[in-house]
Length: 509
Image 1 (cartoon, rainbow, N blue to C red):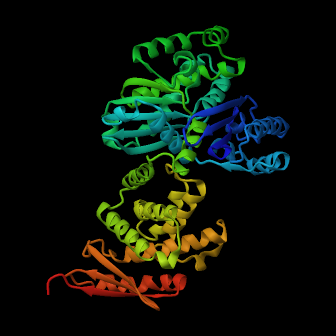
Image 2 (image 1 turned 45 degrees about the horizontal axis):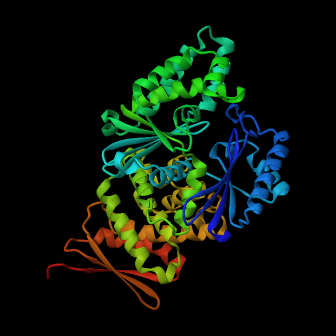
Image 3 (image 1 turned 30 degrees about the vertical axis):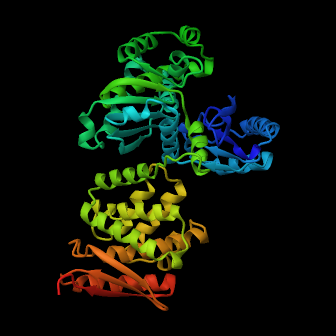
């Protein structure tokens, strides 16, 4: 029976949590929270205080005891993306392992947003009704906010903004020591940051009204959501009244009114000011508070991985990749054809590559975004693609997976990992081989539309003893494509040991 249970632990900037769930039913058996805060100063670029490691380790040992008491053998410890950015994060990670035997798996912002979206879709009853029209999920973390936009049941864009309540709180503390009107200055500061973010949203999203699902707003959730309920629909008029009350209130009043501790009350004003601005940006029609967080998302994701949920979310990852490609003005017809060819090659060459379904997804994302560097300069655009992708947070992808996609994009054109080994060493040997295989496949797919003219619409693949025959169906002159194919095929031979052979079959003889 214990095999059906999973223990998820999450270390955040300001707290640590444990959730034990039944993966078959999705029911939560136990929830434990520790207020040990090991990273509240990281937004000032300060190191995590080693003195708090002992407290964190003690809390984690308590979590492990709870897990043991329930007989749970399947569990994992995650660390938030914000914590992973601390200068000494890896030292802390090692010390936690030495003291508890638990290895922290760092999350990316994209993963945090993705698993929260999963939890909302499966745990919030109003989700499917809301996303049928126009809806926006606003997710607040300590130092960031994520906005995911939906229309007609599909994700259309997901953007991260490095602005969250804890980060804003630190700005407010500085302003109170230096500015005569700190709240007004803080409001201007938030407006400027959000306006900069707003400029990069697609035009179609800048004017659409949205039903808003808000997660991560602890003070609002604690005050408005009834006990034992997951959500509460808050009229905008009521939220605005609440905001005016908060802005003019003392900390002591808020502690009594909202039942907050002295540590948490400092986050209320920054959070409310940020939410006010974000609701204006997304043209909120209505506000739905949902009391789910990253930890709920992690347990929901485990239910999906265990095969106990039929709903899968890979389309959100692909939609976010398409949004990124549109932002950098990737030519859509070439991108779509390369994606189609790459997936066809992957599926027909399974006996050669022995890669996973997740690798197939990474290839698909790479096919969508591999040309984004052309926005900067078409000359050596693959190098620019590599840089841009490494600096991007992509929904649903880990930091390592983003590195893989960036490397595949870097090597889709002319360079090879063997020529660039210093750059390539950041990944494990196993992951380097994955990059090489995916890049070799993407190279052939890209060569089949080298002129960006879509002169080939269909291909067939045949694996022989020492060669792979790729037949292109087209009535056009394919001299350029043939030359590009033969040039790019050498890397495929180096990786797989088989020579790709290009053949043309005319559609009309």
